Every structure is written in structure tokens, then in C-alpha cells.
Image (cartoon, rainbow, N blue to C red):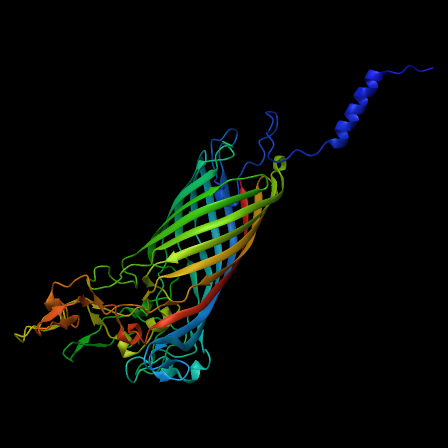
Length: 510
């Protein structure tokens, strides 16, 4: 006959209950001292490579990715003509159909994140444009009335439809910057993760030049594909520049070796700040970004010293973003994770001189109202005692390069990205984004700069008569202004514009 052992039975039953109710350890439970460090990164947006962090003496993350962008929109034009459906003739309407714009860009994204110290990394990026194509086609039958919708000065047409730019390729820019997590939730659970960064962007290849894949032939000598702005005949060998007195001056050109180029020809300063806070399996975040660009010497932006220029710098850009990273699955001790990121971005782009959808078409135009130069300085007429102001023929000349003054506008983007970290040393990103570009004028310059009203002799046509009949200066002439495209009633508008992006990245981590 067996003897029962009540205490042993109770212990056995308790052990069985604990086994039955056991569950896997949650990812955010405290790590034991004896456990390996495992996955410690925050969401992708606030992840920073570091070094000299415990047993991890050095971090190097190498990224290779491919991105495809498709952009499209309508080019409209203001009109004050009495045309049914467009305008009554009594006011300016910006709804005359001009062209349909299509752009496609294939880009190779390369990046290296080098850990320098705890939560401090050096970041080097170099986007490479594999292919960039731009086309203008007819819109609502505009190709059949080009002499109306593309009219310049009386008797001229600015360009022809269809219009196609040459394919561009090369290094977009070289970016070098620093990123630092000044707060890190993985180190102090009572604080969020806060990352700040600064990045310089440098043009290291040929800047973009206005070119036409199908140059016009309505000049004595056939037009070259990429003519220098000072080559007013667009023939690659120079031309005659009309002087202010009706005579001609020898033109200067260096158009033989010009290429389409691919970089913006600017030096950029990019600042960003992101804050995130992980709560169980989600990590919401907010961010601010700012981009300042400064044109380089010798580019088609022109000189920054032109006194009358209304705006002589590229647009400034500021962005607010908000998103949430969802981590539905992760095994930290095996360095595995899936992260799904949902993000919204709102960007303000200020007024400035920029490459617009009409950059190539206007910059390669052979219309005299665009190809002839403007003189940058006016002076008192030495031939008369009357208070008259005429051009100074010795002053610097401003040519049409295709870069135009664009109106301030908003850019709004929704995106999503899935990140799969397969192990300690490799992860992959797959994402897509949709962007809406607010309607805005892309030829938006002003005839006069009102900041200079104290020099009547330099005022040129920027003057008005007082009640006594004596003229007074309202400013000085803007040498970048072109009446055929900048006058209200002739300005071009980029409307109903949007773009799609898709990308895939592979990251290896050492």
C-alpha cells in the first residue's frame, strides 16, 4: 500500500499550473544581465548608428536603394482675351490649356552611416540619377492652336509642342552630415528619443542647362540641342546682340561643349529634428526639416549681384511631418523585426528662382523676346537735359536661362514603408508615397524692384508722374523680368500636379 505525500503533490500541481499559464516574454520587458544585448534600435526615423557603446565598438551601415518617381501636371496660362470658356476680357483668368507635363526619374540611392560615438554618426549620401526624362504634350487640343497659347511678343511663338528634353543622368549631389540622438529612450525609459541633424549638400557634377531634344529650325542656322544663353541665335557659333541704339554688338557664346547636366548647381544646408516615443508596439513621432540653397558661381541662376533683381536666390523650404511606426512582430534576441511606417508631410516652398516644368522649353527658346538680353543698369540720358533714364550699354547683361521666378506653394505627401530586419546584419525597406503639389505660377517675376526709389536716373521705366508733373522713381528695372511670360495675363501656371514614388532599399550593418 502506497503512502501519499500531500506536500509533494501540491508542489507538482503548482509547477504544472505555471507551465500551463507561461507565455513568451514581451519585447519591452527588462533584459537580464546574462542575456545578450539584442535589438535596441528605435524606429527607423530616429535610428542613429553609434560607436564605443559597450561591446559594440564600431557601427557602419551601408545602404543601397532604388527609387522611381513619376510626376505629372497641367501647364495653364493666364489670359485676358475675350475667349468663350476662358475669360470675358474684363479680367485675367489662369485657365487657358497649354500643355501636359510628364517627368520620370530613376534614382540610385547610396548611403553610409558611420558611428563616431554613442548616438553620434557621420552620414554620407550620394543620390545618382540613372535617368530623368521630361516631356510636354498637347492639352485639350492646345497643340492645334499653338500660336495662341504659346504666343510671345507679337508675331512670335515661345516654343513648340510636343517638346521633349534630353535624358539626364549623373550624380545629383554629394551630402555629408552629422546625426545625434541627444535623448534616447533605449538608454533612459523616462525620456523620448530626440534626433537632430545637419547636412551639407554639394553639387559635384555639371549643373542643369536648358536643352531641347527636338530643337527648332525656324532660324537661319539649325538650333543646337544645348545652346549657351548668350548664343542668341541658338546656333552654337554665336550671334548678333541688338544694342540699345539699334546697332549690333558681337555676341559671346561658349555653347559648343554644353551638356544637359543633372545637378541643381547649388550648395544646400539641410537641418532636421525628429522626436519619437515608443509605447508597447507603436512609436509615434513628429519632425521638422528645413532646406536652404545657395546658387553656385557660374551656374544658370545668374549673378547674385544684379541690383534690380526682385528675387535672386533659390526657394527656401520648410517641412512639418508626423507619423507612427507600428512594430507588429519582433524577436529582439535574434535581431528580427517588422516595422510598418505611416507618415504625412506638409512642405512650404517659398518664392524663388527655380527649375520649373518649363525650364528646358523657355531656356532653349529662339523667340527674340526671350533670347535677347536685358541690360542690368539704367542711367541719366547724357544727350538731353530732361530727366530721362536710358540703359547703360556697358552694364552686365541678363540672359534667359530657363530658370524662372516661381510662386510660393505647398507640397503635401502621404507615404508608407515596411522594414524587415532579417537578422543582426541586414534589413530591407519597401515603400511608396503620393504627393500633391499646390497650383502655382512658374513665371512670376516683377518688372521693378521697389527697394530702390531714391535714384531717378537709374529708374528707367520704373517711374510715375506726380500731381505737379515731375516724375518720381518707383524702383529700378528687374533685369530678369520678361514681359512675354511674366506680365499678368501671360504668366504660366503649374496646376493639378502630383507625383508617385516607389523605393526599395537594402541595408547591411557591421
